[in-house]
View 1 (spheres, rainbow, N blue to C red):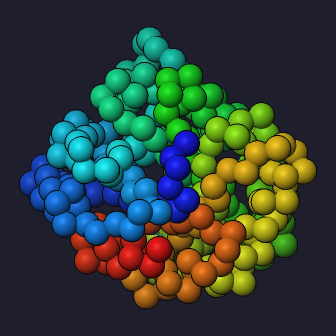
View 2 (view 1 turned 60 degrees about the horizontal axis):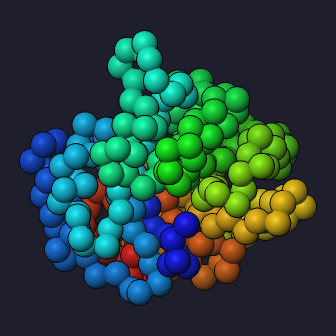
Length: 243
Ligand code: PEP
């Protein structure tokens, strides 16, 4: 795990093209100012991993994938394995992002399989957990998070957890500091009751240059997973600057 105590992860999702990905990676590598305590990880689409890894070599920024296959190797047409991601030079992999859980129906059993494969190949899994709006409104957020965390109990010491309420992702409406505080404490308590580990717990969900300072003041927030705002250099720089 990184010796930096704050993490800011850029999730570029299925955005950018050959030119814009190269431009943004180059600008991050040459111009992004980062305080000593912060580790920045960039997660481009699989197809741009090689370009971004080469561009960011020796810059101190690390690269991660947005996903990996739930199987190790073999006849899985169109998939990309943990070993391939590791081979190309990634250090991290986002696993169980809500877009994977909801659009591609990834269940907790798949999330743990992917997490174990990531660990097998030396990747640090950034495992996303979070409740939907309907679940929050039905007052079952903690039950949902408990189910998502249950499977991960044995690997709490090897992963990064990202609390990402589904209703806050890509909506422009971040969770309030009170909501983040409450859920981070719930996750922390669950981890402590079930292990000796103290994994970093990130917040993700419409983090931007305007709300990042306030969110960073919550002491249980160890950093951010940033989608939309990581696509613009200036916005991302402002987010990284809060630490
Ligand atoms: C994400 O992709 O994990 C995310 C939090 O997206 P956004 O910042 O756009 O809400």
